Amino acid sequence: MFAFANLINAIAQILDYALTIYFWVIIARALISWVNPDPYNPIVRFLYQVTEPLLYRIRRVIPFMGGLDLSPLVVILAIMFIRWFVVASLIELAIRMKAGGASI
Image (cartoon, rainbow, N blue to C red; front, side):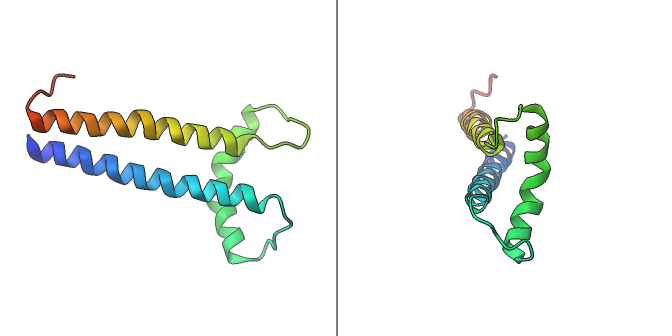
């Protein structure tokens, strides 16, 4: 059972790292949106390609706020929720499985 607990813990850690990286990518995307970036810059293109699919879906749901784009804020809040709830729950489950009390 300890091997499955270690697997769950590893998945939780990888998910946490991935969400942290995406959090900072969203922050960078929001910051470059305040200036007029060169659209042919490889870094700018990368940031747009990685973030635009998710931000576009959120923009379709959130009403237009007169030039204020709230979609990065919504994504950041979602990332924080997933890290605090899902990742923390997976780590706690792994700890309980290692301790022998795997009652869910």
